[in-house]
Amino acid sequence: MLLARKVDGYTAYSSSATDESVSNGTKTPAKQGEKMRQVPVMLHVQAFLLSLMNPSAEGRFFYSKEDGTGLVLRYMLLDPTFHFRDIVEEARAVVLAGGTMSPMSDYEQHLLSYLDSSKITTLSCGHVIPPTNLLAVPVVKTTSGADFNFTFENRNKEETIAELGQAMLAFAQHIPDGVVVFFPSYSYLDTCIAAWKRLSPRTSNFSFWDSFTNIKPIFLEQRSQQQPSNQPSSSKEAAVDSVLSAYSTGIANNTGRGALLFAVIGGTLSEGINFSDALGRGVVVVGLPFPNPHSAEWKAKMQYISSKEAKSGGDGKAAAREFYENACMRAVNQCVGRAIRHKGDYAAILMLDARYGTKRIQDKLPKWIRGSLVGGKGVDEVKGLLDGFFAGKK
Image (tube, rainbow, N blue to C red; front, side, top):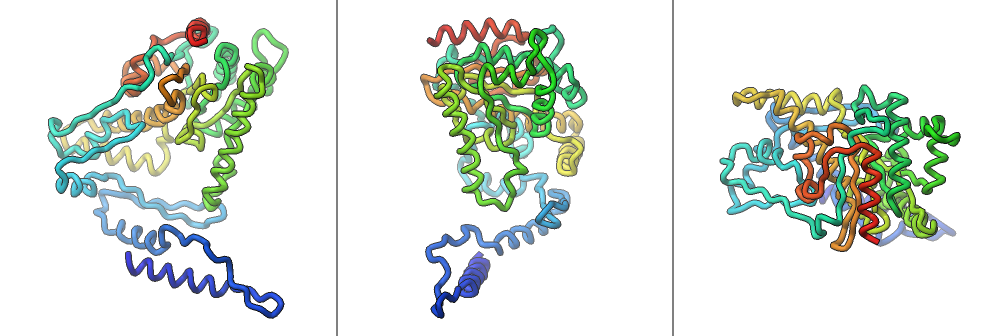
């Protein structure tokens, strides 16, 4: 590490000397006071070389071509058990704490699998709010009575997007102030917007899009490809702040109409952003954001988990499926946790997909949400629940 910092310091010094400019015959030194890189470049090289020393079974290398950056080489650690075990064995106790750790079975099965279950204690805390300040509903039926089905094979169908539009109209009319809607991907958000600008609700000559804006103004999360990886983090934060500021102003200036914010699960607005009070009276999650099982990274991870479980005498396919579902639900839990940020706050959380009505999926929700969860409902039933919930909060 010391050598890496020395090399980085020399590089920074050489660069500063080279950047000196000559103006009116007088040398003017380059800007002073610029912060040095917190992590020397050579440390990244060092970390990469050290990863080569890991047993081949523990990780995989992946390469890809990306615009503007050339060839990108990545290393993915498939099994963190060995690297974390030293910490566990040297300590009297290890505490893993976080705001969104559910489902927690992954930590027991893939990080601490060598420990006896009696040595592992899990705790899922309640929320500071009373259960009556949260309405959590699996919305399993469309306005026509069919199941909400946002599987990859079904979600792009025109009737599915139209039914989603009908549901969004109902929610926008029955939820006051701000409503944040999380889509499973940027591409699906684009698909829905394009369809909603073309299709119309059953009882209107206006398009879905125009109908939305007649109820609440719409704001959109900036797409990730509009934020290059080499863009300074301050610029990305400014882009996020710009959207949030416009959304907040839209709610404040619309005399009770509120606003709609369309965002993406795993995007810039799904983590670390607080939609408290009027900014998030409603959070809507569209579908289940399963990772792409055909990507090289996920294929490698699933194959590794399946193989490891099978070698220990277990059901490899079931273990891989469990891990896959947990990754999806952890992303969902991250989104729904954006609302309700203090003890006096209240909000409705609506999860659209028939699969949210199953016990298997509901068991992966945080304890504080499960305590306020009602049975799976259709869109028309949800409208009545929303009216009653918010009427009691006035």
